[in-house]
Length: 509
Image (cartoon, rainbow, N blue to C red; front, side):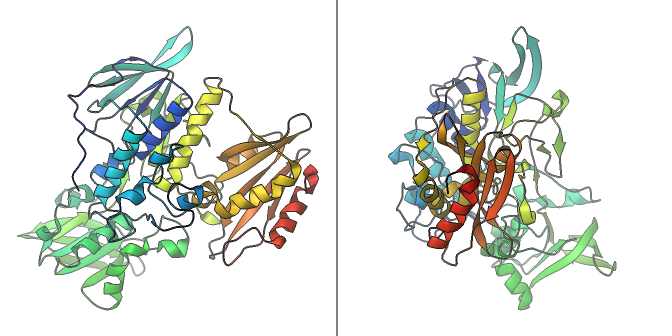
């Protein structure tokens, strides 16, 4: 598939200057946020070091086929909200011509799009929604200034300075990270692996047993003489841990090869050092269970040990980060906890875990999750920063139960961000019942003082999924799980009765 042309020499929008909001990044997170800002009429600038839209999908996944699916014949058909449940790769738009674009770029060979198809999907979204981005503009460093109106940020770029009160960084978790292992410089990182044929008839050790490690192993299976995957912890399958954190089913072939003795090894061991011995490399391991030392001679070592967040000098402004990936500490609204005015979109929003009941985190590291986060952030900025009134439609009391159960059965936001995003209704004597839209569940539980209900879908790790109603009435909060259903239909009589009973303290049931 030919790559779309976006030339930095063409007419370039957003010249350096002062804007209310500056967005850095043109991957799916930056594009979705820019779309939301446009919908609310918020003046902003979007800058990107890349020559065109796509972000990480201009380069990765390395072996070209995504982990996230788009099922072209799902319920409702392309363009509908029910279809979003089975479309993990499209951004969200109101315009019919810009909806469900990933399905239009499938080549018929798989419902997992190719990397090139994902890039084309994002480029089409930018074009059809009229999103402007200043490409070829590299963010270099940041300073904070005080004036009569308070703090503002100045982003120094390759094109000049951009000043703003609110800056949103949608720069991904994209900088290669290697552990501090003696000899690690002898390994190639995932980002530098190169073509599979380079490893023909070679012995390969892959450090890391998460998705990127198994992706490389899958790509090298037809080529390498032998493959050994190693990390201190056992590999976890995503379908077992009920989270995208584990190894996705599409990459399980190397594990099957290992079980059947086909030339792939899976080792639970820590890497102590890597040494060169003639034309070969020797990797020294320490076994996790027995603490035995093991040395393996190979031709290549590949580091699939992860990435870190390219925040440049933001920590010098007081930004707090955590974890191996250096994710910024964020509020439940994706704003820095230590530097107000710095916000985040895209995969970085996985730094907000929400309640993480049963240890299951949200899907904010993937497009199908963070696309909703970006739209909520745009709405939050519109309301809290720019005083834009957000409409909250009124519902009749007898419409509440069917409305919420329809959302539980078909609402894509709840399905893709289980236990994290909630459909919220507020209840007041004067205002009646109002639809507050989709917001983080934690915000309803900890910040909302009005009576109301937050409905979410939750999963307990056993395979069961079910709606949960959080009801606040007179300052008292109750949590009511509704029955699970084998066919994932939550509109039965039993569900209507259970939700009606949960709503009785609000005088609705």
